[in-house]
Length: 154
Length: 283
Image 1: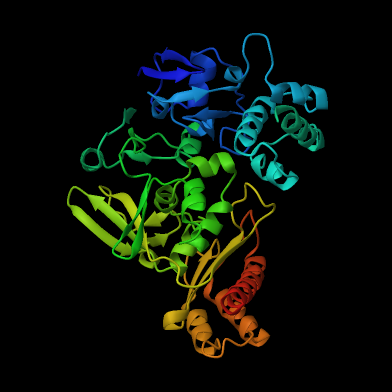
Image 2 (image 1 turned 135 degrees about the vertical axis):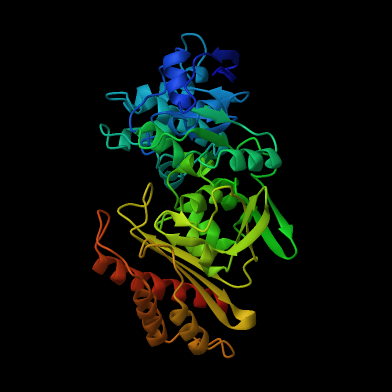
């Protein structure tokens, strides 16, 4: 089937989409957006987090057809040109990136957190990132990156 | 496979009547896992996210009508005051991303004994509104589940909404698992106090083939709580209540926990939630 939706501000069309396909697969394999990562495929790890109509969701759990006519923003859409977003910059500065696989999902989740709560407390950060697993950092550097991004964005 | 995305409720019911094997999908948090892992290949997906009004709630004849497509995050944000027990349970579902998508209708449709939404609906005496081209019926949630992942739903029916009275007293929900987030309950318990009729509602999750009530515990608490004096809760009453809740369950040993652990945990959860709720009522 054909799916049309807005992705990172542009109207996009994906063809030959299988009816049971996930939004994640469509983004990565049909629309050339490999930023969202495919890991658990069951909503446990958060590495595929994208905005769907402004709400962060696991794109592996959205059927591609459910995104038709809707607006998707992936990690690729959070920065412009070669520049990095403030959240991405903070992750680099804090050393919150190791293997990097969880990073795109975390960047989207943190972006959403700071939109809603520009000055989050540590418990708020932990709660907001509870669905994003990282097996490298032990999370402390990620916490630091969020605090850094919050200070920078104020 | 077909992907069907009806634009109206009537159309959705017509599709379900024509294609009873079509799998309804809303938040996708259960259905997509089955598809991603190739466990299930339904002939059609019936997408309910474009049906107007399904993801909303309203007041209807003194009760709250929670649309089947209302995600947990909105239950938490919008119904925390009127349905505190359900909102508490919603907060323990998955992660923020899952709560943004997962729905009460999906929880009921999957009918897992471990579904977090079920115990508060049992404790609150909710009813499930089922619809088909044949008409609409309501089923008390206590009669909805018939076995693990099974319910009274006919093949042509869809879940329209849940009807539940706003809380008229304190409600509580507690759940045990291996961590706070992303946990399927090893055991869960919901409690509702109804001071005006001096009654107590209970709901037990993940400790039997279906979510279940603990009627003897309800009757015991209703008879022994000092409703008139609002005196402090006798620890012996709380202990006995926990014991009766635990006795109502029929847990099994599985990968998430043993039956013995579940029985013990339920007694603790029931005792604690009764203590919290009674303090709230009298404090």
